[in-house]
Every structure is written in structure tokens, then in C-alpha cells.
Length: 344
Ligand SMILES: [Zn+2]
Image (cartoon, rainbow, N blue to C red; front, side, top):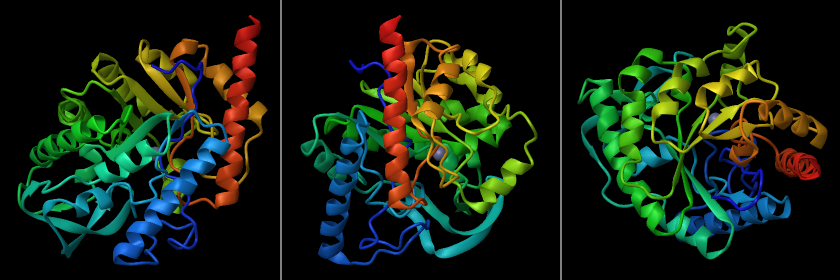
């Protein structure tokens, strides 16, 4: 779809300006309310777009400037979930969190991100990617006292996500991405209904679709979990065969500084692969050569026209300076490989 070889993008979130919300923190509170907040979010979206454009990123996003959290913000806009009725659950088998409860049938009374996407579309001619949470990751961030079935709730969310995705497509989004970090944790459910609900979420879409599967933001609960995973991280082995058979076009995964064996990419042969060539769990900025090195390794298992250089995950918890440096390294690294391929 992209005319550029090795088009760069980010997994999704980028740091927010300190005037909008307290930086380097997840679930950071907004510093404005009402119309002022709406204006401030739009301004931040433009800043984020300018940062990506300046860094030479080819497929741009909203940097998730209008959301507090990649899952919660979407759910906040749905009916059937009570944010005042909170229960403590274990998120992705990793850490306890106080989460809202499903108290009735879930539905989407109106679009969630469509106005934001329209606004982004008006301000750039570049390809746009929009991230939504995936069904399995959504149910894992809630207490369900209504359906009492993770599968049933996932199918309901898939239907809602599909409605939102179709509206995003209609306002000119080129790639719709579903974030499913839960695919690296719940392997039985993944095989039983995880990929099937994801396919329900993309049904009828004509734009490109992606699934982002990672090892999470660089927060302590995630880095502690990674310590327990051993020398080789083979979690992708569980989802890749099913995804290879699915209708999803693009698979976004974590490769930089991770212990994921690169040859696992072989399992998704034929798909476009967004290779994470930027580590989001460190403040150290990669050199373009380090990025190029990761891309070179990936090219052993994916054809050049199907390789999209990206980041391991979102960069919301990083400082703006660090994130900016990483964006530049990503596009400089991709340039090195483009030149190498052109010289062949
Ligand atoms: Zn991620």
C-alpha cells in the first residue's frame, strides 16, 4: 500500500506535552476541562503530528494525545460499564488493578475517536494509522459481573470495535490497528476465540488492518515479568500460525533489545510485518546503525516490500526529548537499509 520502501511508523502513543497532562506517567490526569480540554487535546495532536513529520515518520498517528489510556479511554465511551463500581482484578496475569465493572449489555452510543481521526486527516496527506484496543485486551481490563463469560464479552466488544473501525475508515484512516498484548499471555483463549473475535472486529473493512502484540510499556510490572520469561521469548509462536491464516494484513511486534528469536517471523510469511526496532523500555536512544542492524536481521525472514520499521510499543511514558530522539533514529536507520537495498 505504501509507495515508500520500509515506511516507518510508531506502535501508537507518544508523550503528551506537560501543559496537557503530567508527563512520563500512565493514566495522567488532564490539566483542563470542557471546551478548553477539547482545544488543548487538538493542539497536542498537532504538536505530535509535527514531531512525527519533522522526524520523517512515513505513516503518522494521533500519538494518542486525546486518550488517557489505550484501553480505558475507549471503554469510558461505552454503555454498560460502570466506572464507579470498581473491582480488583489481575491484569494479564501480571499485576492487580482496580478496574470498572460490566453491569449491563455493552454498546457504543456514539463514535469514540472519529472526530479526532477526521481532525488528523484534515492536517496531513501522509498515510494515517489509528490504534484501537483489541477485544481480548479489553475484557482483561474489566470486571464482568454481567455476561460472566470472557468469550461472550469479547464477541460483544468485537462488534462494537467493528462499528468504530468502519467509521474511522470512512473518514480516511488508512490502517486500523488493534492492540492485543493479551495475545502474548492467554494462549488457550487466543486459539479458542481470540483471533476469531479479532477477525470479527475487522469484518467488512477495506482499509489495511493491523494487530500489535508486544511485551508492554516500559513500566516496572512489565520489566519484572520479562525477567521471568527466560532466554528466548517464544510467546509469538502461539499466535503467529493462527494470524498467518487470518485476514489481518499487518502484524506489529517487538524486536529491539527483546529476546524474541527473529526467525519466528517466518511463521507469518506473506503478512506485512511492523518490526519494533526501537526499545520503549529504556531512555537510551538507539543509534541509526542499531536500528538498521535489527531491520537487517528481520530482512532474513520478511521481504523488503513487507517490512515496516516501527517501535516496540507506545512511547507515552517516555520524555518528549527521548521520544523525539528515538523517532529520528528510526527514520535514519530505515534510510540506511533503503540505501543498501537500492545499491543491490
Ligand atoms: Zn504495545
